[in-house]
Amino acid sequence: MSKFTSHLTFALFFVSMLSGLVIVFAYHPSTALQSVQKINFLLPYGSFFRKLHYFSSELFTIFLLLHIGLELSKNRIFITSSSWNYSVFGFVLVIILMFSGFVLKADLSGNGAAQVAFNLIKDTPFIKNLLPLIQDNTVFYYKFFIWHILFLPLILGYAIYRHTDTLHVKTEYLSIAIGISILALLIFTMPRDIIPGVDIKNLSSPWFFLGAENLLLKAWAPFLINLILITPFILLIVYFYTKRKNITKIILAIWVILYFLVSVLFK
Image 1: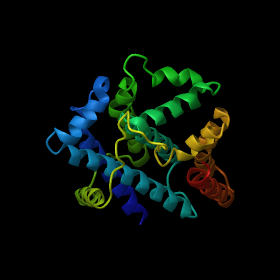
Image 2: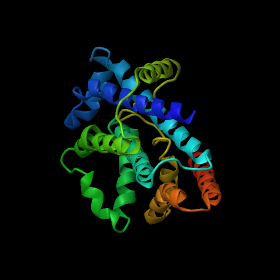
Image 3: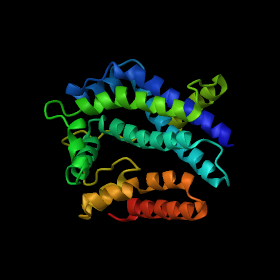
Image 4: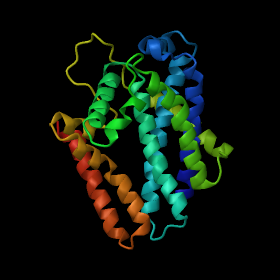
């Protein structure tokens, strides 16, 4: 089961990259919202490939979480410390990649998520110096765009290679990945774009970012929120080296439950 999920996870990453490559040439950071609408309504099959990119990315993240869960369910870890550390690093990159893609929707929800991220960074000691890496005062989406289409995929690809020693995707898994991604876009509805000027009370961030947004709205200190956000990644690193793996898994499970409750109920 673990081998199946690992191969399928990588195949879904491949589908996400290919579908993103189709629509990237129609997207311009200086006219981001107009570009999204052009992809939706004017680019031939643009809406299909945008949905395919969205759902393959969501499935990639879900299967990555499943893959991590299966690895944690084992009594032993059968990979090197370097491979494990690169897998955790890759997990961090996936979350950042997903978040930057959400911002690039360029609608009210994307703008709101970006502002939340800016506030978490600028009000936190040490990491506030990283803000210029994503914030552009001239073209709002420019640096998000560059990170999303270039640097993050390249770094993630390297992390995957160091984790698995290969970047080869098997045809049978690629076929399954394409099939379930298309099935998902036929069954489910992609979150609608909220055009500026529309009267709406509640804006929604990406599902994995809702907890952080809710805590910020409750006036929690950004430093504490960032500490909460990095906790699972720290626990995953610790898990490899500690002999008390069951305790680490229990703490991680408690974190997941509490973060879920904060995301759903704590508004």
